[in-house]
Length: 453
Image 1: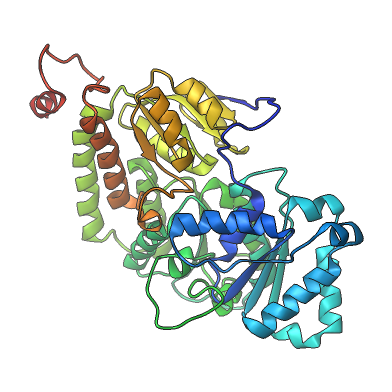
Image 2 (image 1 turned 180 degrees about the vertical axis):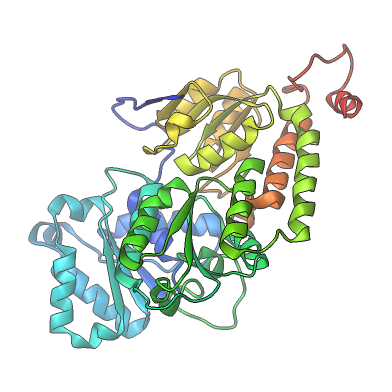
C-alpha cells in the first residue's frame, strides 16, 4: 500500500491541479443547450475559459455573474438575477447551470435561496432549468468539482420511473475520460444491444465537429429529456471512483442499481467492463472485441520489452493516475513517484511507495533519474530540465492537437496508449533502454526486442 502525504508548503509552485469551479463548468458543458455560469468575478471565469479554449481549440460558452468589490460585500443576488434574465433572453438555453467560486463562497452567498426568490419574482424563467452547485476553489480540485457538478445535475433533473426501459443504461463518465474515450465506450455498450444515456456527454458538445447551426449555448450533449429519463434505466455504470457519489445519489433517488468501474484502461480493467456488459445485457461478447483483446495481448508482448523495468513518474488527477499507473505496471514498469491533486480512496492502492498531493515542483524533485515523466502540458519544462522523455496526459494539453480525440480506454485505446509509451522509449534509446533484461554490448534496443519476441 502507498503512503499518502500532503506537504505543507507556503505556496504551490507550478501547480498541477485545477479548481473545483472549472471541473463543475466542464461537466455542465456536457449538457445540451446549456449555459454554464461561474458566480464570481470576471477574472475567475476568464481564466477557466482560456484554459478550456486552449485545450479543445473550440468556442466555449461560459458566463459570469461579474462580481465586483461592492457586490461581493453587499451580496450577489442582483448579479445572479441579472445574469439569469440576460442569459435567458439572449441565449435561450434549456439549462442554466451555476457554480460558485472562492470569492462568493467566502462571502457566503445563499444561491439556492436566490434561485428560489428569482423564480417567485420572475415566473417567466420557469421554462428554463436552473441548477446550482457549491464549488469553492480553495479546497478540492478539478475532479471534485466535476463530481459535485454531476451530482447536482442528477439531483435536480433525474426523476423516478414506474417502469424500466428495456436495454437502457446510465453511464456516468469521470472527468479523466476524453470525448474520444466516451465515443469508444458508447460503441462498446451498444455492441451488447444496450442503449446508453451518458451524463454528462462531452463527446456530443466538445468532440470538435463542424456544425451548420450556430448556438450561443452548448451544441450537443445530454438533453434534459434524457437526464429526466435516467430513472427508467436498468443499470448505471459509474466510470471512475470519483463518480461513486453521483451513482449513489441517482440510486437513492430512482432505485437504479449501479456498478463502479475504477478504470477502463488496461487489460484487467477492460475485461471487468466487458464482464459487466455481459451480465447486464445477457449477450455474448461480440467477435470484434475478442479480436481486439488478442491484438492488445500481442501489443503488450511487444511493448513490455521497452516498458518493463522502466522508472516512471506520473502527475495526474486520482482516477487518471490510477488508470495509467495500473496499466503500466501490468507491463512491469515501476512507478517511482506519483503526484496527484486531491484525496481519493484509490491513492493508497497505487503501486508505489508514496503518493503526494502536491504540485509539479514536487514531481520534478522526485523525477530525477527516472526514465519517463507523464503529466499535462505544464510539466514539459520540468522534463526538459531533467532531460528525460515526456508523455502528455490529462488536462490541459495546449501544445498538441487533438486533445479531445485521444483514446486510452477499451482494448483498442489501451493498445494505442501502450504503443505510444513504447515508442517514446524507442525514440530515446540513448536515454532509456529496455530494463527487463541486460543488453549485449553494442546491440540496439529494437534488435534485442526482436530477438526476445
